Length: 83
Image 1 (tube, rainbow, N blue to C red):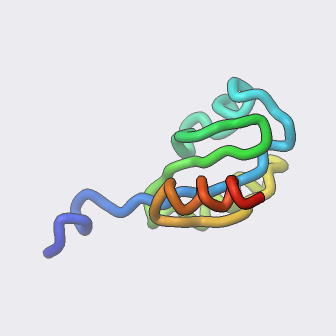
Image 2: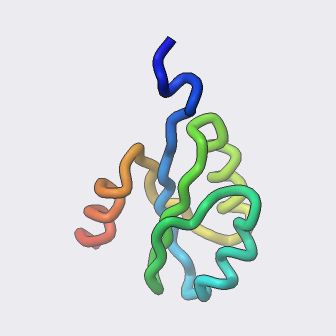
């Protein structure tokens, strides 16, 4: 058994904020995921790898546009920098 099997892998989802404030976004994703990065255009949430699809559907249903999913924050910050 691999250690990650017990702990669980993390996924980071990049989404466009649509100009909403950080406090509003935290209220929306309150118990679903954890907001790890925010600027006025983009946000990154962390979730378990088993919950990734559910979080993407949830973000889409609340009006956020998901852009990319990754296993590291660094990759998503590079995507932000290139846009």
